Amino acid sequence: MPADTRPIAIALMGPTASGKTALALDWAERFGGEIVSVDSALVYKRLDIGSAKPTLAEQARVPHHLIDLREPWQPYSAAEFAQDARRAVDDILTRGRLPILAGGTGLYFHALLRGLSPMPEADARVRAQLEAEAQRHGWTALHAELAGIDPEAAARIHATDAQRIQRALEVFRLSGRTISDWRREPPPPRLPVRVLRLILAPADRATLHERIARRFDLMLADGFLDEVRALRAIPQLRDHPAPLDLPALRAVGYRQAWEHLEGDTEAAEFRDRGVYATRQLAKRQLTWLRGELDALWFDPLVQRDALEAVLSAFMRPPGGPAGR
View (cartoon, rainbow, N blue to C red):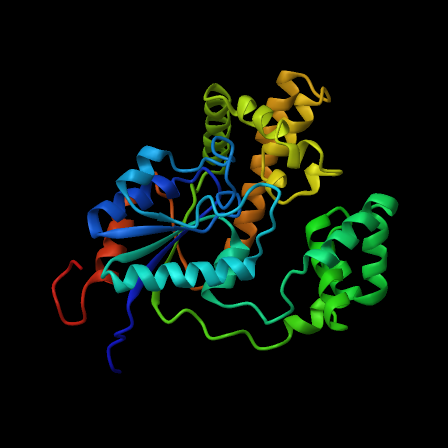
């Protein structure tokens, strides 16, 4: 069998608080890499502490891509991410460097590595119409409308998932075809690189839960609530009819902080809700990751040597010594 001569990239996947950022920085510095963020919260400006965004010092150590692309009130789709990420990967390879894809947003990884079926792009006019209808009748009513049009999508999308309800109805109104029908179309060509898919996940779920709680407490100590106070003062968010329906503010922790600052919860309850929501996010991420059958799982806390061995073997040129 001929050697695979495609350029290489590394995908570091895993649940939140599993150590992806630290390992991506380490490997990027050691192997001449640049980091492509695969995280739906990091695309938003002003969401820094609560999203665990790499600090300015960390971003100065290693070039980062796909961070701070949109304001919190602006839309950004998985299809847009795939296009932007492909360009970033191409640019990194052109410079002779190693792309390291790091994050925990499964849909973004799927869009980039496997491709999304083609469908109409977002339309601001139709989205505004749907938001106005939701304000009058509620997203549950729009979910019922979707059930009449596309029962398959309605069964897959929760009645409170405003973003996905809106997208499914938007696609139908723009094209006259259901989103389920569009998804059966063949996807575009895959990313033309050889990717080492690695999943970082502590084997002990209690260990992951402890890391999540510790990180959330550190965020609070670093001024997370002040960050959300600043968001609440921005006119585009302060005057938005339903700010918590915006994708940016559905990022884990932000909804809970916003509601706390509205006076809905006491400090201790807010903290517990934030930790619980983050644990639930990690659970959903792990469920998605189990479907990545071509990925290798490692506990980064106890299997670092095995992880390094797999990396070394992957980066070894065909017939050559270890190393890049």
